[in-house]
Length: 202
Length: 387
Ligand SMILES: Cc1cc2nc3c(=O)[nH]c(=O)nc-3n(C[C@H](O)[C@H](O)[C@H](O)COP(=O)(O)OP(=O)(O)OC[C@H]3O[C@@H](n4cnc5c(N)ncnc54)[C@H](O)[C@@H]3O)c2cc1C
Image (cartoon, rainbow over all chains, first blue to last red; front, side):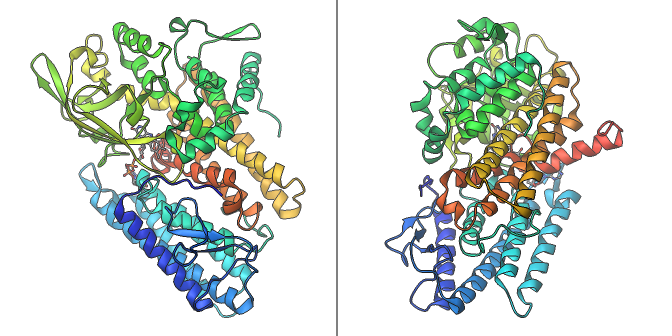
């Protein structure tokens, strides 16, 4: 694993630290006082919770990972995975809200960018994905396959949301870094080992 | 995958560049960790190719000659193929290289002979010289015609004040083209050549999620003195033919090259999956084949468009279409790769992790997907896009 960070302004570190704290809450819900490892034996948590871990690339040292923990047993893995997808959902919701207020303040030809129909359509696409994934999350009898599909939809909607920020989403201080962390967590914890049947919407 | 057909001389060039690109993975990883690491890799043949592919033949000691062919990269097709192959090695490395890149095309489009000569004479010297193309501003990105950086008269010259953002290599450059406003409206835009050592110029690197080799930077211009001879085309072009025209021409000429960058990265990630998972079956194999088909189709389209530019046919709707297809394909291919390579692949496979982060850059470079879609729509309305 390599570290790929460069220095970040303080407020962004704040965002990342808050995200790391919420990730720790997911661990806490599933394994009070401990951590939950992925099916392939990886554990990712805040650097405080995993002091012996290696920094996770792209998270400025706020997240750490360790390998070779025995995979978590069923109830803990289920509770953790569910909490993780919900964390991703909340994050995307915030990212969408942030995009809307940013676009309202950015103008072209004297009017806010938010007035452009293409922009409005993109906002609506993300909102529709958020609405559908929330309903999917609330269905009874969740399965690992369903969580993974929801994660895939959240990744796709997240990429659409980032487009709305222009290049500021690609700067390390932008929301792209947080969604990247959520994508990496899903790739680590929610991947069931088989390439996904019926995928291709990526 | 079969290779899209090319004229013989372009094929010779492609295989030559491909050899040079094979060495770029390790330097690319290093530049991702530390964008200044390019300084340690300038001896590589790929860095020399970047120079040879952007400086006109008359300013080179020896032009690029392979198997009896001489290359002068005025050809958009040859430039596109060169950049695609280098990006297969590593797109970040390619973007971090010194040389004229986009600013050179703006100087060609607008500069008079004296300006062009001074610019290329500087760039042909043996020491590495980085340049930049400064169009985007903190408040005005897609709305480039509304840019606010001001060029104000001052005695027999001007002063340049304002800010630019997300400008590749600016924090390391010696020279650059800055688009600025001398008068209201789109025709009041000028392009000026700036020497970054002049008082009032400041630029700093913006850390990014990926494509760190692009070294995008924030520029502050605080009353930088600009002589008339630094205004591109001041003595030779009417004001309405300056500034904006250069920006548009540069971007049109560069979009197939940028599409080539995205397609080189796409091919790299799909080949990586095939190498790591040679025995994929069923749906997984079908997904990979689908992406490879799309890649080949988009490469062919891109070569056709670049050849058309060489023949003097600049079709902005198709140029926009291929840029956006290539950018979206790069993202889809990297997302699929992370899935096909299995759980924790983004943690365990640093090369995949890098391509995955890099691929998001193309959406924004040289205009967002929305803006390209508007150009495609224009082509549909005029019955040119699918003709
Ligand atoms: C790696 C990288 C390298 C770059 N290199 C350079 C460089 O060398 N020089 C340079 O000058 N710039 C460079 N850029 C900047 C790039 O050109 C801009 O990011 C791009 O033009 C978009 O501008 P913006 O980021 O301000 O987004 P905005 O224009 O603020 O767009 C925000 C959102 O609104 C949408 N939108 C805006 N206007 C419209 C409209 N009229 N209709 C519909 N939707 C609209 C956009 O599509 C986007 O979704 C680079 C960017 C990156 C990421």
